[in-house]
Each structure stands twice: as structure tokens, then as C-alpha cells.
Amino acid sequence: VQLQASGGGLVQAGGSLRLSCAASARTGSSGVMGWFRQAPGKEREFVAAASWNGAKTTYAESVKGRFTISRDRAKNTMYLQMNSLKPEDTAVYHCVETSGGLTLSTMRNPSAYESWGQGTQVTVSS
Image (cartoon, rainbow, N blue to C red; front, side, top):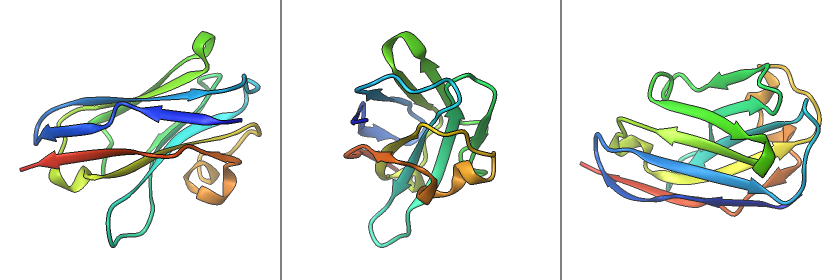
């Protein structure tokens, strides 16, 4: 499965962006799609993930209450709505997917995912 992420850009602190991740093929309902991010000089960080069937959703504590992950099954697309953005949210955001079911804990592990998108830059100015 190939993933195409889009929607990044430059925004002021407090603003919003919506990232999209389109998958080239349909994954089973138990599959999981999510987002990781990496800022310059920092380690890759889990952001959010959700199963395609909606049964499981999990967020990093740093984005909980500000970011919302959603999906359009008909379009094989998952979204990340990012509100109340902060300068520390600045990073390259990568979407990921796996066809297998994951536990909530495993959804936070980058090694659990089979496919990675190319990344989209999000820059939040102060």
C-alpha cells in the first residue's frame, strides 16, 4: 500500500491545519492508520492512530484534546485535524498503515506499521 500525505503548511500558533493521508488500496477493517512526526534533531514521535473500523483510537498525551483523527472509508483516506497548534508541533508528519489489528499499546510503536508515507511539513510560528 502506498500512502500519500498532504495538508501541511505554515500556520501561526493557535491556528489549525488538517492533514490527509490517502491509501492506494483498501485495507481490512481491522487495519490501522496513524501519524508519527519528527522534528529536526529530535526522535520520531507517535501522534495518533485509529483502526479503520473505528473500534480503537489513541493519541499522544501532547496532542490529546487538540488533535482529532478521523477516516473516510469510501476514500481510503484518514485525516488529522490539528487545532490550537503550538510551535512545538513543528515537524514532518508521516502517515503510516498496517493491515493487521493492533492493540492500543502497539499502535504507538513505529515498527508495527507496514507502510509509511513521504511526510508533510508542518511549521507553527510563534
